[in-house]
Image 1 (spheres, rainbow over the protein chains, first blue to last red):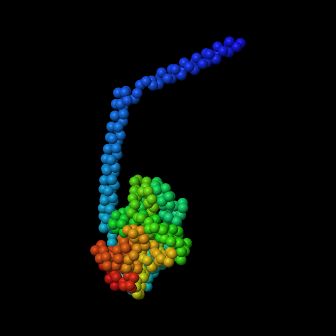
Image 2: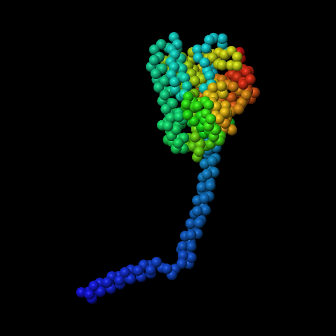
Image 3: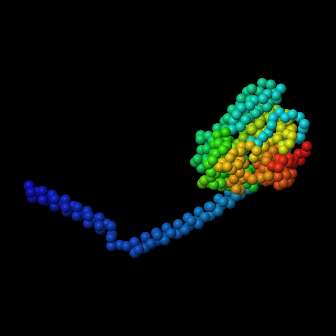
Length: 105
Length: 284
């Protein structure tokens, strides 16, 4: 009975030790990122993409600002055209008693 | 026969005059329109579309709020910032933070730092967005807009005049309108267009001993200091008249008279020292 339990413990220990060894080997602890040319290339590419994204964002912001300023100018043109196109109000000073009064609103 | 109908909305007395028999339906519809627009455009109503915009900084707005904001932004451009809807925080800082009837006219609380106006507001499609910290007030221009909308409705019944606490819209007929001057009141006869009065003679209060009024100069963020007491301007519609009256008021008497003459805006300028100047082609 005792030797049977001992064998089971030994087997379980052996399995744990095996998987630990597997994990350690799979992690390639002896390799360094600095040494891997593929990782270096990826890092360079990432930096390049970040720079390009920054440039694109700057261009988009400039174009957006230009669009907004042109839109404002266009809107004020439209407003000016509307105000000149509207019929001027007919008004004159009279001596009649007023029907209503305008006060500070 | 002229039918008269009055009620309160937008913190002021509203008056409809219509030259028609049986205009009850149009009068009711025009009053409903006022209340509908007040519910959308009031900064004092928590649930208004404008309050939601000011609270959240952005909103998918209905056509009325969008249109009034666009009109206000166009007016800001046209007047080089003398008319500016982004004076909300400046009004609040001056103490106009609740409906005017609820302001304590002798409040001892100190004024807050002047609010800054001129922040960015964008309208793209149905979306209105405010820059961080920007809030807008559409009090004056909203009343002008409501007066125009109500006049459109009333005009279906007959010639009419809508007076929204001084902002007047006219459609047809001949309407003698009294204007307060430094001396005897003047009567102007209007047959179309709009008229509005802006001044520092009403909507005044004191705060910590300082006399304040509701017309904010967007350049300083404080109640405007000018030699004018009051300006009445006549324009193609009540919205334009409201903008012109405020802009001329901030310009000061001399400059306002020159600008009104140059632009052909009929105006009555009343100065603080008791002079009345007719400008923009208006003659006694």
